[in-house]
Image (cartoon, rainbow, N blue to C red):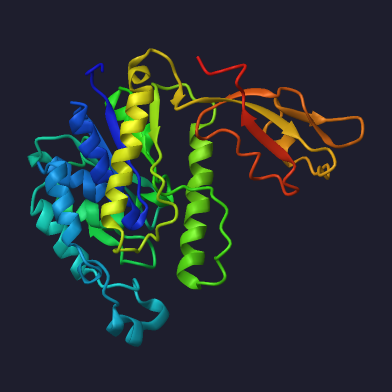
Length: 354
Protein backbone atom coordinates (compact mmCIF):
# COMPACT_ATOMS: atom_id res chain seq x y z
CA UNK A 1 0.00 0.00 0.00
CA UNK A 2 1.29 3.44 -0.99
CA UNK A 3 1.51 5.62 2.13
CA UNK A 4 1.46 9.01 0.43
CA UNK A 5 -0.95 11.56 1.84
CA UNK A 6 -4.70 11.42 1.32
CA UNK A 7 -7.79 13.14 2.67
CA UNK A 8 -10.76 11.48 4.35
CA UNK A 9 -14.36 12.67 4.00
CA UNK A 10 -17.02 11.44 6.43
CA UNK A 11 -20.67 12.00 5.57
CA UNK A 12 -23.64 12.53 7.82
CA UNK A 13 -26.40 9.99 8.26
CA UNK A 14 -27.54 10.12 11.87
CA UNK A 15 -26.54 7.12 13.97
CA UNK A 16 -25.51 5.32 10.78
CA UNK A 17 -22.49 7.62 10.95
CA UNK A 18 -21.05 5.41 13.68
CA UNK A 19 -19.81 3.37 10.72
CA UNK A 20 -16.98 5.89 10.61
CA UNK A 21 -15.53 4.38 13.78
CA UNK A 22 -15.00 1.16 11.84
CA UNK A 23 -13.49 3.19 9.00
CA UNK A 24 -10.74 4.49 11.29
CA UNK A 25 -10.11 0.98 12.58
CA UNK A 26 -9.58 -0.29 9.02
CA UNK A 27 -7.30 2.65 8.18
CA UNK A 28 -5.23 1.97 11.31
CA UNK A 29 -4.80 -1.66 10.29
CA UNK A 30 -3.61 -0.54 6.84
CA UNK A 31 -1.17 1.92 8.40
CA UNK A 32 -2.96 4.82 6.73
CA UNK A 33 -3.26 8.16 8.54
CA UNK A 34 -5.19 10.92 6.71
CA UNK A 35 -3.54 14.30 6.41
CA UNK A 36 -6.98 15.96 6.47
CA UNK A 37 -10.44 14.86 7.61
CA UNK A 38 -13.58 16.70 6.49
CA UNK A 39 -16.76 15.80 8.38
CA UNK A 40 -20.47 16.47 8.01
CA UNK A 41 -23.05 16.01 10.77
CA UNK A 42 -22.30 12.72 12.59
CA UNK A 43 -19.20 12.49 10.43
CA UNK A 44 -18.03 15.75 11.99
CA UNK A 45 -18.37 14.29 15.49
CA UNK A 46 -16.31 11.20 14.64
CA UNK A 47 -13.78 13.33 12.76
CA UNK A 48 -13.45 15.64 15.77
CA UNK A 49 -12.82 12.64 18.03
CA UNK A 50 -9.98 11.58 15.71
CA UNK A 51 -8.58 15.11 15.61
CA UNK A 52 -8.66 15.23 19.42
CA UNK A 53 -6.39 12.18 19.48
CA UNK A 54 -8.78 9.29 20.11
CA UNK A 55 -8.00 5.89 18.60
CA UNK A 56 -10.59 3.75 16.84
CA UNK A 57 -10.72 1.49 19.87
CA UNK A 58 -11.43 4.43 22.18
CA UNK A 59 -14.11 5.73 19.82
CA UNK A 60 -15.76 2.32 19.70
CA UNK A 61 -15.90 2.02 23.48
CA UNK A 62 -17.37 5.50 23.75
CA UNK A 63 -19.98 4.83 21.07
CA UNK A 64 -21.09 1.63 22.79
CA UNK A 65 -21.98 3.63 25.91
CA UNK A 66 -24.05 6.32 24.19
CA UNK A 67 -27.77 6.04 24.81
CA UNK A 68 -30.75 7.87 23.34
CA UNK A 69 -31.02 10.21 26.33
CA UNK A 70 -27.43 11.30 25.72
CA UNK A 71 -28.47 12.84 22.39
CA UNK A 72 -32.24 13.13 22.03
CA UNK A 73 -34.43 14.73 24.69
CA UNK A 74 -37.61 16.36 23.48
CA UNK A 75 -37.78 20.12 24.08
CA UNK A 76 -41.17 19.88 25.77
CA UNK A 77 -41.17 23.44 27.10
CA UNK A 78 -40.29 25.00 23.77
CA UNK A 79 -42.76 22.80 21.92
CA UNK A 80 -45.56 23.64 24.37
CA UNK A 81 -44.92 27.37 24.71
CA UNK A 82 -43.55 28.33 21.30
CA UNK A 83 -45.22 25.63 19.19
CA UNK A 84 -44.26 26.17 15.54
CA UNK A 85 -41.74 28.83 16.57
CA UNK A 86 -39.68 26.35 18.59
CA UNK A 87 -36.11 26.17 17.17
CA UNK A 88 -36.01 22.37 17.23
CA UNK A 89 -37.76 19.24 18.39
CA UNK A 90 -34.88 18.25 20.69
CA UNK A 91 -33.02 20.12 23.41
CA UNK A 92 -29.47 21.24 22.69
CA UNK A 93 -27.99 20.42 26.13
CA UNK A 94 -27.56 16.62 25.82
CA UNK A 95 -25.77 16.85 22.47
CA UNK A 96 -23.65 19.75 23.75
CA UNK A 97 -22.55 17.67 26.73
CA UNK A 98 -21.67 14.70 24.52
CA UNK A 99 -19.59 16.82 22.15
CA UNK A 100 -17.81 18.63 24.98
CA UNK A 101 -16.93 15.28 26.56
CA UNK A 102 -15.06 14.40 23.38
CA UNK A 103 -13.36 17.66 22.36
CA UNK A 104 -13.71 19.90 25.41
CA UNK A 105 -12.89 23.57 24.82
CA UNK A 106 -10.31 23.01 22.08
CA UNK A 107 -10.20 25.39 19.14
CA UNK A 108 -9.12 24.32 15.68
CA UNK A 109 -5.82 26.12 16.26
CA UNK A 110 -5.09 23.79 19.18
CA UNK A 111 -5.58 20.53 17.29
CA UNK A 112 -2.55 18.50 16.29
CA UNK A 113 -4.46 16.96 13.39
CA UNK A 114 -6.06 18.83 10.50
CA UNK A 115 -9.85 18.94 10.77
CA UNK A 116 -12.52 20.71 8.70
CA UNK A 117 -16.19 20.80 9.68
CA UNK A 118 -18.93 21.30 7.08
CA UNK A 119 -21.78 23.69 8.02
CA UNK A 120 -24.14 26.14 6.36
CA UNK A 121 -25.17 29.65 7.37
CA UNK A 122 -28.92 29.20 7.82
CA UNK A 123 -29.69 32.81 6.85
CA UNK A 124 -27.53 33.23 3.75
CA UNK A 125 -27.36 29.58 2.64
CA UNK A 126 -23.56 29.85 2.36
CA UNK A 127 -21.43 26.79 3.01
CA UNK A 128 -18.93 27.50 5.79
CA UNK A 129 -16.01 25.12 6.38
CA UNK A 130 -14.65 25.63 9.90
CA UNK A 131 -10.98 24.80 10.26
CA UNK A 132 -10.00 26.45 7.00
CA UNK A 133 -7.72 29.55 7.03
CA UNK A 134 -9.40 32.43 8.87
CA UNK A 135 -11.89 30.08 10.51
CA UNK A 136 -9.68 28.30 13.04
CA UNK A 137 -10.03 30.37 16.21
CA UNK A 138 -13.47 29.02 17.18
CA UNK A 139 -14.29 26.09 19.42
CA UNK A 140 -14.42 22.76 17.64
CA UNK A 141 -17.43 21.85 19.79
CA UNK A 142 -19.44 24.77 18.40
CA UNK A 143 -18.68 23.81 14.80
CA UNK A 144 -19.54 20.14 15.44
CA UNK A 145 -22.85 21.05 17.09
CA UNK A 146 -23.71 23.28 14.14
CA UNK A 147 -22.86 20.49 11.71
CA UNK A 148 -25.12 18.09 13.64
CA UNK A 149 -27.98 20.62 13.85
CA UNK A 150 -30.33 19.22 11.25
CA UNK A 151 -32.99 21.91 10.73
CA UNK A 152 -36.10 21.24 12.77
CA UNK A 153 -34.35 18.55 14.81
CA UNK A 154 -31.80 20.64 16.74
CA UNK A 155 -31.60 24.45 17.01
CA UNK A 156 -28.98 26.20 14.86
CA UNK A 157 -25.68 27.13 16.55
CA UNK A 158 -24.65 30.74 16.98
CA UNK A 159 -20.98 31.36 16.09
CA UNK A 160 -19.55 34.84 15.75
CA UNK A 161 -23.04 36.33 15.75
CA UNK A 162 -24.43 34.19 12.92
CA UNK A 163 -26.39 30.94 12.97
CA UNK A 164 -25.19 27.69 11.44
CA UNK A 165 -26.65 24.25 10.90
CA UNK A 166 -25.98 20.94 9.14
CA UNK A 167 -23.79 21.35 6.06
CA UNK A 168 -25.66 18.46 4.42
CA UNK A 169 -28.10 21.11 3.22
CA UNK A 170 -25.39 22.04 0.70
CA UNK A 171 -23.45 18.78 0.41
CA UNK A 172 -23.42 15.79 2.72
CA UNK A 173 -20.20 14.38 1.27
CA UNK A 174 -17.93 17.42 0.62
CA UNK A 175 -15.45 15.67 -1.65
CA UNK A 176 -14.69 18.73 -3.75
CA UNK A 177 -13.88 20.73 -0.61
CA UNK A 178 -11.45 18.01 0.50
CA UNK A 179 -9.77 17.99 -2.91
CA UNK A 180 -9.34 21.75 -2.89
CA UNK A 181 -8.03 21.85 0.68
CA UNK A 182 -5.89 18.72 0.70
CA UNK A 183 -4.76 18.59 -2.92
CA UNK A 184 -4.56 14.83 -2.56
CA UNK A 185 -6.59 11.70 -3.32
CA UNK A 186 -9.70 11.18 -1.22
CA UNK A 187 -11.28 8.31 0.65
CA UNK A 188 -14.96 9.27 0.96
CA UNK A 189 -17.37 7.40 3.23
CA UNK A 190 -21.05 7.79 2.43
CA UNK A 191 -23.74 6.54 4.83
CA UNK A 192 -26.51 8.98 3.94
CA UNK A 193 -27.31 8.95 0.22
CA UNK A 194 -28.85 5.53 -0.32
CA UNK A 195 -30.91 4.91 -3.47
CA UNK A 196 -32.55 1.68 -2.33
CA UNK A 197 -36.28 1.69 -3.02
CA UNK A 198 -38.39 1.99 0.11
CA UNK A 199 -41.99 0.93 0.64
CA UNK A 200 -42.59 1.92 4.26
CA UNK A 201 -42.56 5.71 4.03
CA UNK A 202 -46.26 6.22 4.68
CA UNK A 203 -46.60 3.41 7.20
CA UNK A 204 -44.21 4.66 9.85
CA UNK A 205 -45.06 8.34 9.81
CA UNK A 206 -43.35 11.72 9.82
CA UNK A 207 -39.85 10.66 10.86
CA UNK A 208 -39.49 8.08 8.08
CA UNK A 209 -40.87 10.45 5.45
CA UNK A 210 -38.59 13.28 6.59
CA UNK A 211 -35.50 11.07 6.63
CA UNK A 212 -36.33 9.51 3.26
CA UNK A 213 -36.66 12.99 1.79
CA UNK A 214 -33.18 13.82 3.10
CA UNK A 215 -31.73 10.67 1.56
CA UNK A 216 -33.17 11.53 -1.85
CA UNK A 217 -31.89 15.11 -1.70
CA UNK A 218 -28.43 14.00 -0.57
CA UNK A 219 -28.16 11.40 -3.34
CA UNK A 220 -29.29 13.85 -6.02
CA UNK A 221 -26.77 16.48 -4.89
CA UNK A 222 -23.98 13.89 -4.77
CA UNK A 223 -24.68 12.62 -8.28
CA UNK A 224 -24.55 16.18 -9.60
CA UNK A 225 -21.33 16.98 -7.75
CA UNK A 226 -19.49 13.92 -9.08
CA UNK A 227 -20.68 13.97 -12.69
CA UNK A 228 -17.86 14.47 -15.27
CA UNK A 229 -15.16 13.97 -12.65
CA UNK A 230 -11.80 15.67 -13.32
CA UNK A 231 -10.14 15.76 -9.90
CA UNK A 232 -7.79 13.47 -8.00
CA UNK A 233 -8.83 9.83 -7.59
CA UNK A 234 -11.62 9.19 -5.09
CA UNK A 235 -12.27 5.88 -3.37
CA UNK A 236 -15.87 5.61 -2.22
CA UNK A 237 -16.61 3.49 0.83
CA UNK A 238 -20.29 2.56 0.98
CA UNK A 239 -21.22 0.74 4.21
CA UNK A 240 -24.43 -1.23 3.82
CA UNK A 241 -26.39 0.42 6.60
CA UNK A 242 -29.40 1.66 4.63
CA UNK A 243 -31.68 -0.64 6.65
CA UNK A 244 -30.70 1.11 9.89
CA UNK A 245 -32.69 4.09 11.11
CA UNK A 246 -30.85 7.40 11.41
CA UNK A 247 -32.06 7.48 15.02
CA UNK A 248 -31.35 3.87 16.06
CA UNK A 249 -29.22 3.17 19.15
CA UNK A 250 -29.73 -0.60 19.14
CA UNK A 251 -27.33 -1.61 16.37
CA UNK A 252 -24.10 0.22 17.21
CA UNK A 253 -21.76 -2.83 17.10
CA UNK A 254 -23.22 -3.93 13.75
CA UNK A 255 -22.90 -0.42 12.30
CA UNK A 256 -19.26 -0.06 13.37
CA UNK A 257 -18.40 -3.52 12.07
CA UNK A 258 -20.00 -2.74 8.71
CA UNK A 259 -17.93 0.43 8.42
CA UNK A 260 -14.82 -1.65 9.05
CA UNK A 261 -15.85 -4.37 6.55
CA UNK A 262 -16.71 -1.90 3.78
CA UNK A 263 -13.46 0.04 4.23
CA UNK A 264 -11.31 -3.09 4.24
CA UNK A 265 -13.05 -4.31 1.08
CA UNK A 266 -12.55 -0.96 -0.67
CA UNK A 267 -8.89 -0.65 0.34
CA UNK A 268 -8.04 -4.25 -0.51
CA UNK A 269 -9.74 -3.98 -3.90
CA UNK A 270 -8.86 -0.45 -5.03
CA UNK A 271 -6.49 1.08 -2.46
CA UNK A 272 -3.48 1.04 -4.77
CA UNK A 273 -5.41 2.92 -7.47
CA UNK A 274 -6.06 5.75 -5.07
CA UNK A 275 -2.54 7.03 -5.71
CA UNK A 276 -2.57 6.68 -9.48
CA UNK A 277 -2.41 9.91 -11.46
CA UNK A 278 -5.84 9.42 -12.97
CA UNK A 279 -9.10 11.34 -12.38
CA UNK A 280 -11.50 8.56 -11.46
CA UNK A 281 -13.98 7.49 -8.82
CA UNK A 282 -13.59 3.96 -7.53
CA UNK A 283 -14.78 1.23 -7.31
CA UNK A 284 -15.69 0.80 -10.95
CA UNK A 285 -17.58 -1.92 -12.73
CA UNK A 286 -18.29 -2.76 -16.36
CA UNK A 287 -21.96 -3.18 -17.24
CA UNK A 288 -24.14 -3.80 -20.27
CA UNK A 289 -27.21 -1.60 -20.46
CA UNK A 290 -30.38 -2.89 -22.11
CA UNK A 291 -33.91 -1.56 -22.46
CA UNK A 292 -37.16 -3.53 -22.72
CA UNK A 293 -39.00 -1.91 -25.62
CA UNK A 294 -42.26 -3.55 -24.55
CA UNK A 295 -42.08 -1.69 -21.25
CA UNK A 296 -40.68 1.60 -22.59
CA UNK A 297 -43.30 4.37 -22.80
CA UNK A 298 -41.13 6.86 -24.70
CA UNK A 299 -41.07 9.46 -21.92
CA UNK A 300 -37.45 10.40 -22.62
CA UNK A 301 -36.31 10.40 -18.98
CA UNK A 302 -33.29 8.26 -19.81
CA UNK A 303 -32.34 10.39 -22.83
CA UNK A 304 -32.51 13.51 -20.68
CA UNK A 305 -30.17 11.99 -18.09
CA UNK A 306 -27.78 10.18 -20.44
CA UNK A 307 -27.99 11.41 -24.05
CA UNK A 308 -24.78 9.59 -24.88
CA UNK A 309 -26.26 6.25 -23.86
CA UNK A 310 -29.84 6.53 -25.14
CA UNK A 311 -31.62 7.99 -28.16
CA UNK A 312 -35.11 7.89 -29.64
CA UNK A 313 -35.70 5.02 -32.05
CA UNK A 314 -37.92 5.04 -35.17
CA UNK A 315 -40.90 3.95 -33.07
CA UNK A 316 -40.58 6.92 -30.71
CA UNK A 317 -39.26 4.78 -27.87
CA UNK A 318 -35.82 4.89 -26.34
CA UNK A 319 -33.05 2.64 -27.56
CA UNK A 320 -29.54 2.02 -26.23
CA UNK A 321 -26.81 3.43 -28.48
CA UNK A 322 -23.85 2.77 -26.14
CA UNK A 323 -24.61 -0.42 -24.20
CA UNK A 324 -21.15 -1.04 -22.72
CA UNK A 325 -20.46 1.30 -19.82
CA UNK A 326 -17.94 1.51 -16.97
CA UNK A 327 -19.65 2.87 -13.89
CA UNK A 328 -18.46 4.51 -10.73
CA UNK A 329 -20.84 4.20 -7.76
CA UNK A 330 -22.54 7.44 -8.83
CA UNK A 331 -23.26 6.46 -12.43
CA UNK A 332 -26.33 4.80 -13.86
CA UNK A 333 -28.94 6.96 -12.15
CA UNK A 334 -31.15 6.53 -15.21
CA UNK A 335 -31.90 2.93 -14.17
CA UNK A 336 -33.83 3.70 -10.95
CA UNK A 337 -35.28 6.85 -12.55
CA UNK A 338 -37.07 5.06 -15.39
CA UNK A 339 -40.81 5.34 -14.56
CA UNK A 340 -41.56 2.23 -16.61
CA UNK A 341 -38.77 0.15 -15.00
CA UNK A 342 -37.63 -0.73 -18.53
CA UNK A 343 -33.85 -0.33 -18.13
CA UNK A 344 -31.51 -3.05 -16.90
CA UNK A 345 -27.76 -3.02 -16.26
CA UNK A 346 -25.95 -6.33 -15.90
CA UNK A 347 -22.27 -7.10 -15.23
CA UNK A 348 -20.27 -7.08 -18.45
CA UNK A 349 -17.83 -9.98 -18.35
CA UNK A 350 -16.44 -9.08 -21.77
CA UNK A 351 -15.37 -5.57 -20.81
CA UNK A 352 -13.98 -5.46 -17.26
CA UNK A 353 -12.79 -2.09 -15.90
CA UNK A 354 -9.06 -1.54 -16.39
